[in-house]
Image 1 (cartoon, rainbow, N blue to C red):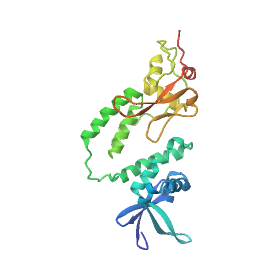
Image 2 (spheres, rainbow, N blue to C red):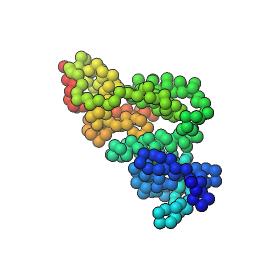
Image 3 (cartoon, rainbow, N blue to C red):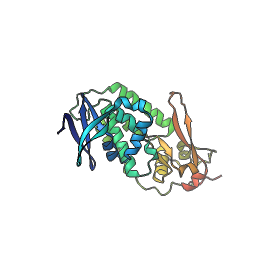
Image 4 (cartoon, helix red, strand yellow):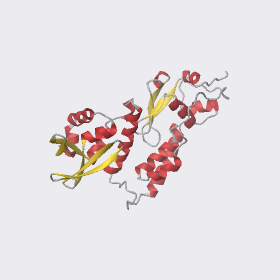
Length: 270
């Protein structure tokens, strides 16, 4: 459809429609549309843009768009700017579960659009399979080092490469409610602060299973980078530490106090 000299394509996103506006050979999105599809207030996005105009003004355009009352000039941002703007909104700080999910999903979609990777199944872009396999090997080592969920890391590598369809077969089982973990523990190795791996050794479980329990019981949550972060409840029983392993990449690891063991029904025989 067209409005004056603008070419506008509408894309359905949930209960809303996202407008992609063609301006001088480049696609722009009304900031208000981004707010609607993500559930984050438009004021929050505009505040970020206004506070850092040097960063966002190169990506911004004003477009005269039709409204029920006539027409008005609307602030729009191109795909690169939109993805940069979305990265400034941390899903970890959003309490509403539905809003958090919508923001993460839209951010992933926008990353593909901004990166020039077609979302069409007929795309002719050939992924760099060698680089993908190297990343798969790397995240396996990273999972062993940090206790992060290996399946989530593998899916993120495939998403970045535009191979979302391959993630379907590695989807973990539907989240199950876990009331308590096995006890008693076979080995008394309680430390002053423990990782998920340390706790798993106390009860014969993997770090992934421990993190699943902590997630199901709202002690940890995934942030927008799919890292495990402590919730407000979790910080009562531990702390986050920034580590720099041999890879040179900074990672955040959750360390737990022995008091978390009681909450997990893990009893260590002294």
